[in-house]
Image 1: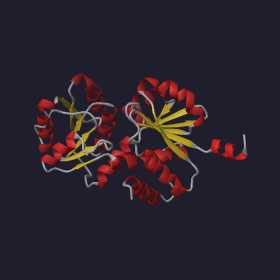
Image 2: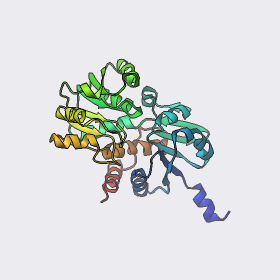
Image 3: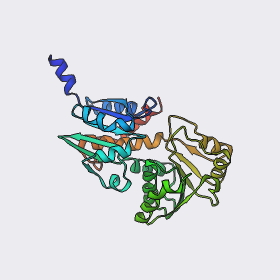
Image 4: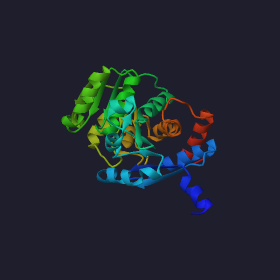
Length: 285
């Protein structure tokens, strides 16, 4: 092995895994951050199906320093982690794995990403709110809403049994969670609706329009399939809707903290400048 080859091999490498993954903007914003920080780190992407996650992790973890985890792998990453931070334990979802010395440190930075971005949009608190969807990201949305002061949350889900874990989590958080089908949702107005539906998921148009009529700000975690059908319904209602790029940015900052230090509480050097560079890369400036 030549000196140059050894140098490349020793370069810290990180990836984002998901299925699909081609739309991911994570390589763009992570790479911008690393360059601004002066770190010779590499960041790529890999399409990994849920059924293949465990095997792929075992084959590649010795060559990687960390992973960003997206749909549909957050539950699998939670299972694979050898330790987890409090938010990951609470939600049962891991979106960040730090791989070091045979350990897999699991974090959920989605919660902090949602909270920081929603507040940047002018919503400091939301005592009542609505979540659309009941998958892994919905757990992060519920914990984020608890941080925002929510006391009552409606979860719009086709199957009540699919949202049973959210009802149980709500009890732990002192948040009253009511599960309602799309056909009867939106009886009351809320200041904030968080949609955690995958980009290809579609609600009946009448249900989407009812949700939009009293849904306040639509905070849709999707960004690769925009506008989503829900965002289009909000547009018909003349109501505000934002995509998930702000959440992606804010949670990525926490991910980079974890990659650098093994925890998420220590700010990056010149973090405000780093965030500005990441935002510029995210928006394609």
